[in-house]
Each structure stands twice: as C-alpha cells, then as structure tokens.
Image (tube, rainbow, N blue to C red; front, side, top):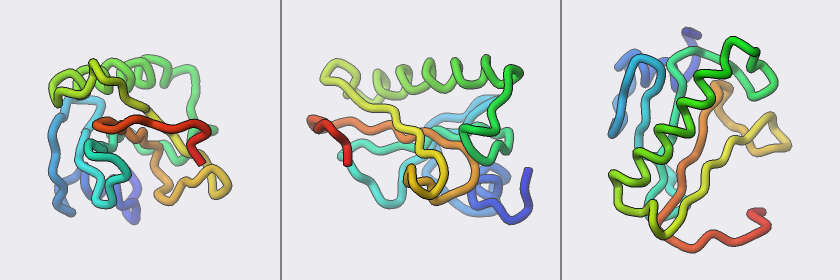
Length: 115
C-alpha cells in the first residue's frame, strides 16, 4: 500500500467509492467520470504503479482481473452486447493514477481506434 495513492485509500476505506465487487485480490467500483453508460474500475489491492511494473508473480492476478471483468459485465447485464477492458500505462498512454487499474466499459457501441 502506498500512503499517498488514491486507489490505496479507496481500498483501505479512507475515501468512499461505490464498490460493486470485492475479493481478496481486487476491488471494483464505479468510475467518477464515466466514459460509457457502464464504466467500472477494476483495481488490484496490491499496489503496482504501472503495467511495466508487473512481474511473473502477478500473472494469476492479471488473469483474475479478466475473469472478474467478465463476471461484472454479466452481472451488470451488458456482456452479451459486448464491452471493453482498457489499461493505460504512463502519461502518453493516458494513465492518471499511479496504481495499475483496468477500465471496464459497456452499455454502448465502442469505436475504433479508441482515441
């Protein structure tokens, strides 16, 4: 855990969030600036700053992220229509919080390229 990390504070319950799923590895909550009708953040409880900081010991965690993305999409009713999972890395990739996280977007048609 990082003392000054926004997502670590949400995980610790120090900052409120609309949490829709939680287990021993992850927390999933609604994005405060949604880019789709359904926009959730999937955040590992382990503080990892960026995608570049993942190691082989995180392989199970990353697989779990995608399993939970599917579960949340199904439970929220938008899996059949399709959805997108996005991870931004570093400034040029659009990362604004330095704790790895995955955007789960659904409820509308996604365009390509994304931007």
